[in-house]
Image 1: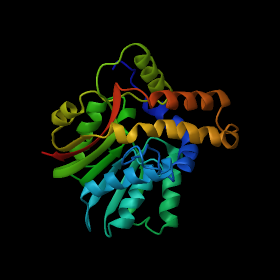
Image 2: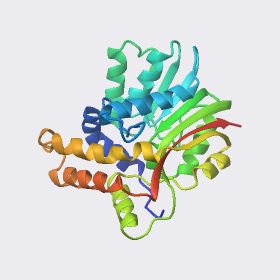
Image 3: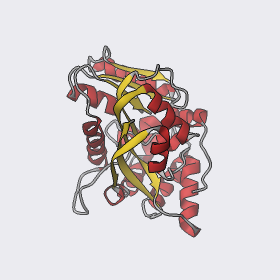
Image 4: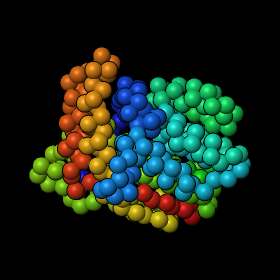
Length: 273
């Protein structure tokens, strides 16, 4: 889809402002959630934690493994991995200084700062050596990359051959037009993102073989409407820190985005060649 490429500094500034809101509503996570079916009554926070576990469970880390969290948010997934996989060493990166400060504080509180490290870094220019990591994961971060191909190539470079990359993210399902295109373009402009086109091709060009590629849109897209509802409920608590017009715009955009069919959500596992 022809939505414009985001800018890393703008992405960082957005999350400096919005992280507190999203983590409050999503149990520390900054991504959508997974429901098993239409009868699943999980809250949006419970569903978000479920998706975190789905990603972490596919990383395949063990004692001594070095794992990279690309776009770590407030550190929830990194900390989840470290506290459920003894001996795993996790490095999380983000372009938001506020997120890094929050994640470091949480690691100290949990007593795992010696093996869960967070640093300010851009995934398109990794500050790590070749083959440094045994696995990596990226939850709703590739959409924020100005150059998605370059980001995947950078991830491939810092992974050893045979290492896994797990991705959970918003993708193009089919070409959008009319009202749906307008909704998607507005959503991307406000949230500093760009939906991912042809992810399997991007992974292949970067040096990955696809192990698993699941379209989980029907389990996930309702999260945007659920998040919109929760934001309405807490509006009074956050409009002093977030401009009211911007807050209300997000509420409406999330509600409308949940109904689009041209964009969807995938959970992918790939292996570094």
